Image (cartoon, rainbow, N blue to C red; front, side, top):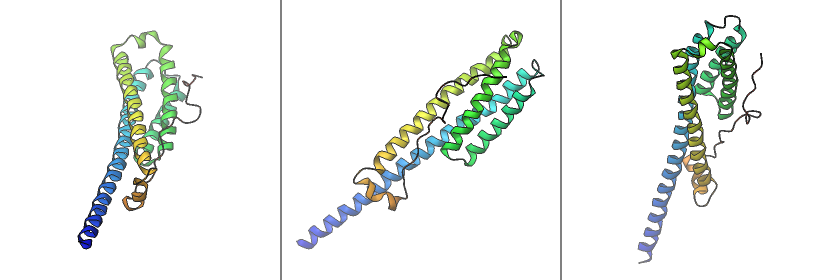
Length: 185
């Protein structure tokens, strides 16, 4: 009878270990997927920006430095999306945000440009993408919160090493990005 009780207890512990392992791994995969969602939206935004820049370029030939910065910022986002840390992705996004503000400021100086259907459609697409970026950031932070709650609480914390799951960092705006960027020429 004692052997049966011991076997039941051992079996229950093994089953709980499997459950804990799987729960931690699912939470980690969810956080990875959410981070990928941010990358998708940032890449989409980076892909929209050349169209916006090309539309504005015809009107603002003398604003070369603005367009060069957009190109460099876009390349930074693409690189960060491919292999950057969360902090590097946030910094690249902040640089692209500032470059985009500068492009839109150039567009403000050309009323005929603002009236074109192509420019208006690009602005609409960009606004939708910005909303998706915000949603993706929030979704990622929610997934990280769930994962970090598991990683730091008993009994899950005892299984983090076995599951190779560790605390993740939140997606925070880089320092100085809490307020809208200022436009300077």
